[in-house]
Length: 276
Image 1: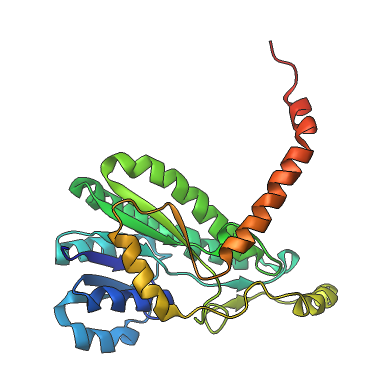
Image 2 (image 1 turned 180 degrees about the horizontal axis):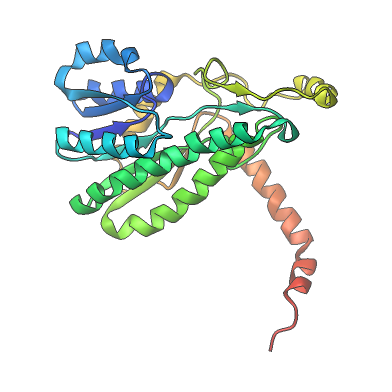
C-alpha cells in the first residue's frame, strides 16, 4: 500500500494527536496544525521530515488557506484532510450569549469549511482524496446543556452530506466520524461554559441523576486502528460511529422520530393542500 499524506487540524491533543501518530507510525506524512505547535515538538523530533507542524487558528480563513497551500507545497499532494479542530460549549439555550454561539460556529463549522474549501482544488486536480469531518453523536441527536455544540455539529453534518454528493465525481470521498464520549479534554480545559441562570438549577440537579448515556468513556488511542481502516477502505462510509453506544442512542432517537412523523402524517398531508 502506497503511503499517504494527511492534513490534520487540532493535532496537538485528543483525536488529532492520536491520528497523527497513527499515520506517522506506519510511514505516512502529516501536516499537523494547532494553535500551539510546541505541543508537537516531541513528534517532530521523532518523525523528522515526515511531519510538518503549522500554527493555525482555523477561524482565520486566510491562514487556513495558506496552511493548506504550504502543506501541499511541501508534500506535493494531499490524500486525507481531517477537520478535527473544535471544542465543546456548555450552557442552556437561554444562557448562551451571542459570542458563545458565534464562537462555537466559527470554530466547529466555519473552521472546517475554510480548510475544506482550501483543500478541494488540490483534491479535484489529483482526482482523489478523503475528507474526514469530526462530528459527534451530538451531530445526530441532542441533549440538554450543549445546544450550541449540537447546532455546530448538525450544521457540519448537513454541509458534509451535501459536499459528499458534490465531489463524488471528482473521486473525492467524505466521511463524518461521529464519536461517543472519549477520555479527551473535550469537557475539560478546552471547553467553554456560559454564565448559569439560577432558573435552571433544579433542572441541572435533575440531570445529575439521569441515567448515563454511556457506561464509560472510550480510549482515544483505540481510534488509531479504526481511522486507518477507514482511510484505507476503497468505499468509505459517509457516516461512522466511533465508540460503543452511539448506535443505541441513534436507534432510539430515530425510531421515536419515525413514530411521531407517522402519527402526525394526516396533518402533514392536510398541510399540503389540494393539487390538480
